[in-house]
Length: 151
Image 1 (cartoon, rainbow, N blue to C red):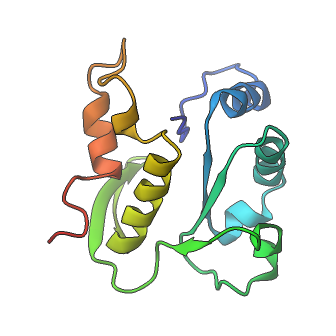
Image 2 (cartoon, rainbow, N blue to C red):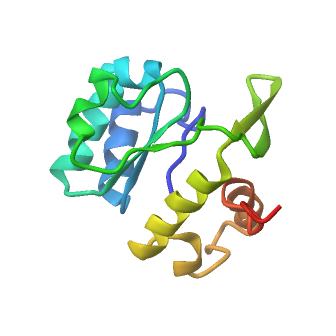
């Protein structure tokens, strides 16, 4: 899993870091927002993933309708909506010193996890915790909690 919010080091060539991450990854989960779909860098990353034959899971985050023309390149795949009501799963996220409550549709989270399991690349498909990352379980539990959809 490669998730970069601000982890690319000072002076590191971010395009090269993303290219390397893209070649190593097994699938891409595109968290689609208007900003992501309008980002030329994001479009390049997706095209690169397509070039390498990576499955792309498109999950709508907010402020998008399935009919949005910016989603046209993904019409041949099942697009899921994390913002669909009910927002019955929430996470507290810290970003740039601020705390936010983010709400997701729990059934959509389950659908994403099921697809990752089907692809053989979900967390339970690997040795855990990964060598050199003893606290990785806490990070993934916040993304894919065991009780999602059961409360």
